[in-house]
Length: 208
Image (cartoon, rainbow, N blue to C red):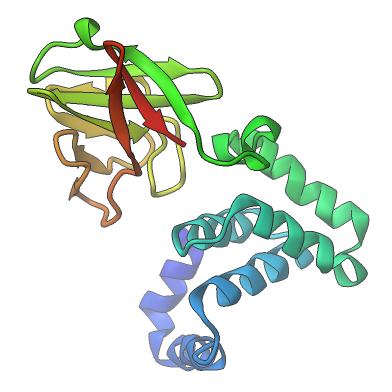
């Protein structure tokens, strides 16, 4: 929520509580993906940027694919019109989310080269650029964990400087993560997105 809405809840929670209960009850028979897709469309209709970003990220967390989100916007064309759909697409481009990039959005997951096994020591973590996506990689013996570099909160791209030992801290809102497990250990609640990994010909590969 915005600071203004937090304020109103603090001073008149007795009144706004009824509104939030209404919103919750109206969607209780919808699956989470459908409910969030509808919320994305409504935020585009009223052109609320913060709300659009919030429900876009929530829809992704609930399992919506980027193409499902794009299709939902296009199917709402009669209500939204082209100008509002373009407005939403411009925000998507500004957010720079890898999964919405043309080279990834239409493709099936495939193994991507991350780095040579010899370039990362046991117990070490690094940030690596892999074409359209940046990742953090952590090695523990012969096991490797590869994470999306975007914070699951508002998808800020975390730089290499955000990593201190085994703690990764998002510079935008201070969410903290344990790089050895991907778990959120401070302020937030969502873990880092982790990719399946394998080693082939002495190189670490990840699936996305």
